[in-house]
Each structure stands twice: as C-alpha cells, then as structure tokens.
Image (cartoon, rainbow, N blue to C red; front, side):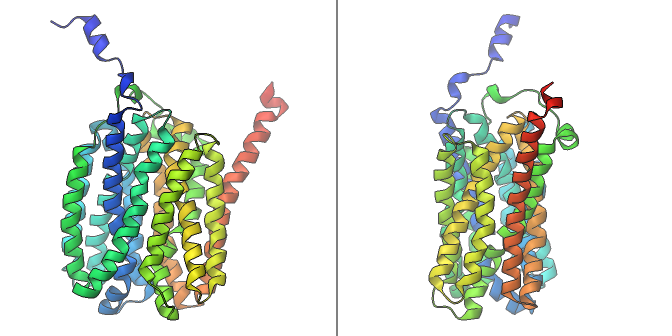
Length: 411
C-alpha cells in the first residue's frame, strides 16, 4: 500500500521543471502550432480576390470569411482553454488539427460563398482556437523568471507563419487556383500540427490549484472588463490590413508584391514579440502593453498618408507589426499577472472573445466603407478605434491611481 506520506510527496510540485529545457520543448511545439494555424488564417488576403471574383461577391461579403473565422477562433478559445485546463493541451490540439484539415478540404469544394462561411469559418476557427489559447496558456505555466521571453518566442510563430505562408499562398493560387491551394494547405497543416502535438505537454503541478472561477472574474473584476473593452476596440482596426492591404495595392496599381506587405506585418510582429517580450523583464509589462495599443492606432496615419508609395506602406506594415507582436506576446503575461496561472486558459480565452467580436465586425464594416466612401474614411475610423483602445487602458490606470491614493481608500 502507498503511505499517506508517499502520496503527499508525489503530489508536491516538481519545481525543477520550471524554466527548464522541458519547457522550451513546449515553446517549440507552440511556435509550430501557431505558425501553422495563423499562417493559414492570416494568408486569407491571397485568396480574397480570386474568391470574390468567382462568387461575384463584394468586399464586405468576402471579408466575412475572415471575420467569421476570427470571431469563432477567439470565441471558441473560452471552451478550448477550459478543456486544456482539465485535460491538457495535446488532445485539444489534435481536435483542432482535425477540424482545420476537414474545413480546408471542404472549402476547396464549396459551390457558394455562404457554404464557404460554414466550412472555412468552423474548420479554421476551431483549428486556431484549439492550437492557440491552450498552447499559449500552457507555456505560461512552464515558466516564471523567463515567462515573457518564452511567450514571446512561442507566439512568434504567428508572425513567421504570416511571413512564410502568405507569399507562398499568393504563388500557389496563381499557379494552381485557390481550391487546389486549400487542399495543399490541408496536407501541410496535418503534418505540422501532428508534430506539434508530440510536444504539447501539461505544465508542472506547481501551477495547478484552485483559483477564482471565470464567473467570479466576470462579475467582480474591473480589470477584466478594461482588458475586454480595449481588446475589442483595437481588434476593430487590427484585422483590416490583413484583409484589405493587398487589395489596396492592387486597386491602386502600386508596383510591389501585395503579399509581401502582409508578410512584413508578420515578420515585424516576430521582432515585437521577441524584443518587447524580453523588455518586459525589465520594464513593467503593462506599460509596454498600453504603448502597443497607442502605436497600433497611430500607425494607420502612415497608411492614410502613404498614397501610392509602396515604401510608406512597407513602413506602416513594420510599425503595425511590431506593436501587434507586443500586444499578442504580452496579453498572456498581463492576464497572468492580474489573475494568476491556475485556470489561465479559461480566463485568457474569455478575454480573447473581445478580439473575436472586433474581428467579426471590423473587416466587413471596412469592406462596406471601402465600397462606399472609400479608403480614407476607413483608415481614419481604424485609427480612431485603435486610439480609443489606448484611451480605455490609460483611463483605467488613472482611476486606479486616484482610488488607491484617496483618503477613504488609505483609511
């Protein structure tokens, strides 16, 4: 029989695993999973024109492909995060891989844009939800002193995937058409996510335990709703370039690769994730996080004044990408600081539903505005949304300082 002393000892957390080589293997698995799913999702701009032409759809209707997918993968993040908290990240990632592959194969055969909303939206949406939130939350549990750096490396897969897959898809669509390209993506995703699943391991027992339930956080935390509102406003603007930047270049007849600009957002986001994630070990993560929101909003002024200059559009892509990378890398760290590591998957998933709503509304509204008043109005409104997100975060900081320094609070 096992003694009570042996049982208690076996349940003690293995502190030696924190910040260990085993954790970096999980980081690599997360890098690969985010590389794959976001490489698929954020390369949609390469499919935008051919699909709109074949289905005879306007910009707003075609943008719904991206918007529905974005909403679903952030909305399903609540469910996938909770499942990973309970069962570990590997089975959740496998479910996501199956959904993504089936969704891409079915989308390659759709005969109407409305059916494509279902196949692509559900397939890619569930795939990203199962490969992103659970894996990122898992990385957070493997590290303490190196957490922001590890998270920065892990989510840099998003940027590398965007840089690599977008130009590749642009070439594949030109050579084989958008339907065959989706089939090729399905095969590649199956292989890469299968490899990533091997390294998807639960965090050490040190981060397990009881925490405030998600319901308690939703009911009683002002900080949660501040993060939620700011994420919603910034997402209204953030996803517009992923859908329409290539279309802008083609409509204006600007010399230069449209796909390369989206790729620049991706590679610059890697720089932001790594550099700003490392900087957060010396500067408060919340300060950098807030600054990223301001830069995202302000960057649209560069696009607004770029006109037909490919160089200025490239500058816009780089500036936006760095700030976007910092926002993504620091979101899990800021959430962990506020609410702890236990149950982080569910709370992080809940925060991300705000970005899902912003992604659902932003691109279709932008498409309608581009078809109507034009790009100038769209870019001004995008800039305002990003700056509003920054204003929400700063207002909360000022209110918190006044509340903590008030005589009533002090007493």
